[in-house]
Image (spheres, rainbow, N blue to C red):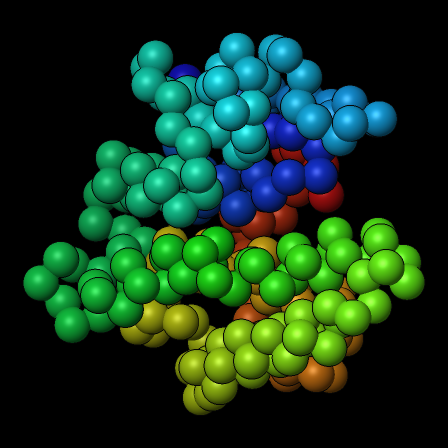
Length: 203
């Protein structure tokens, strides 16, 4: 059975949701950050030396990085679902967005989160961070114009990866700022598999 190693305040929801979409059995192993250092406990580092989450263990193989995990699960368990065919014109866009979610889109959102904890010391950085948030979320919002999903006309791993970007963007900017992203988030959160993931391992 696949183990999903989850650290509190990390981004594991996408992985449990994807497993529910795929109908794959899994168990969640939860860890708590050190309240002083905010670092992972030694037990998670025993799974992978970086101590990062999410991580999965499948038949002894450990996979880290959300995009790599999404790709792994769809290749091994998707049975042709949740990714365009390799020869499809949509495949390159799918791969691009799969990596873009954590490679570029999350950076300004994480900077806002962490720099916000610096108080006045972080104030000089706020305009640039906000500009980058508007740039990335504005592009994603435009990409959803007239469509329900980012690739093709059905859910793919790219949507799974970008779901947290959309949700965090809405949290920071409000539901009215990027209406297409808001509708996208509402659509995915209403999916039965998403609801099952929440019921099984918490909001």
